[in-house]
Amino acid sequence: MTRLIWAFAVATTVTIGACAPTTISPNWGTAYQQMRASQILNPTAGEDLMPVEGQDGKANAIAMETYRKTFEKPDAEFSKSIVSSGVQTR
Image (cartoon, rainbow, N blue to C red):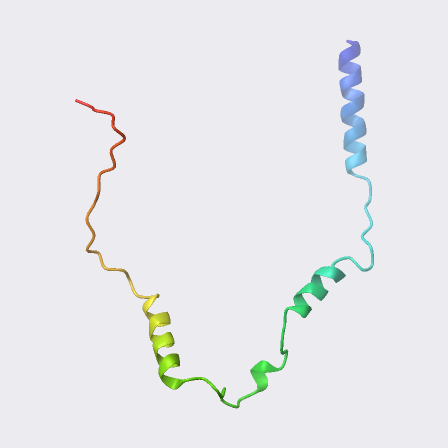
């Protein structure tokens, strides 16, 4: 019976402790926001409508073609292989 009372007391203490109010610092999340902002090299890059200079047009065309091919469905022509672990079954 004593164990039951102790178990009840511990469970009650844990439950009451879990309901205790918590406070968040006023600068909570500031480091995360600063990290995200520091990853942006040029925040106004989307507003610049001038074309990029210094890149080869043919190389860009090949790169774009290769990029677009990655979204195509792969060919269904493949051979199924049977993997054997060396165990013979009969």
